[in-house]
Length: 202
Image (tube, rainbow, N blue to C red):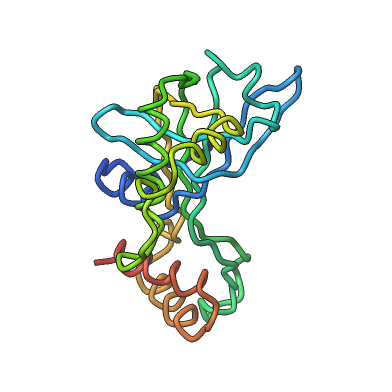
């Protein structure tokens, strides 16, 4: 990913927080000699420097992904930025966004306990705190049947590229103009971009 130095995120904790919050990712690999992508939630294990997830078994991407170096993209909020917000005429439109790219090799998981624990952790992450649903309460035979329909995997992370393009290449005054305009919006993307920009300015 092209990352000018003023857009590069180097804070490891911020990167991990971002991945945790925007965990529905796109996984790219080569399948049958062509680029291929699947959209799916992933769980980051910081202590292992790894991502865990699973494919639907009917999705053929898993069949030739083992040992490939794959690309995973975590995309955050993004927004069009109008030059009219700078209150000058000599400017052009741009787009602000935050994105993180992870690279690594894939291991297919066949251990039933690791698969169950991975699924359980993912469910617990997305279920509401007061949800009555718990995978451990589901009939084991039913779980075993469903597990046959998925292929679990682990991505061993080898490289991370993190980018926050938030108008850092413009004067602070311009950035404040942009934040002011974005905060007038009702669009969640624009409001989140404004929030990221404010954090970056502080």
